[in-house]
Length: 96
Image (tube, rainbow, N blue to C red; front, side):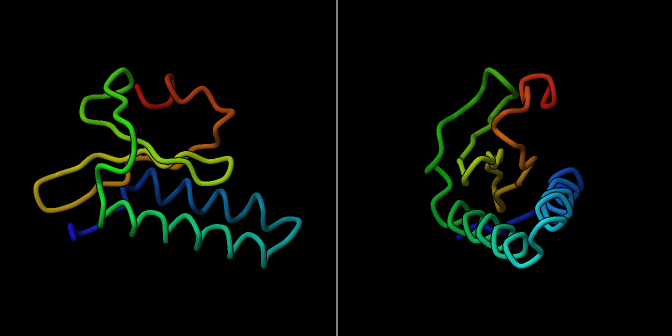
């Protein structure tokens, strides 16, 4: 299994998800962010699991988690989580 690294942007994304959902339901927010992190661990084990999105950035792949999408890149020794964005966002603009 490759190491798992979260970019500063992806860490901010997770904090914002926790805050946004946590306004209404702190327990659900914590559970959902844990689910996202668990999926990231699965991605590190099986990095080819998600489709490539070279149209958005070189070597970019993605994997859905509920209404969010984890964007990541596979490196030599690590899987780098680039962003975690809501599917309704214009992630084409955000990622470029």
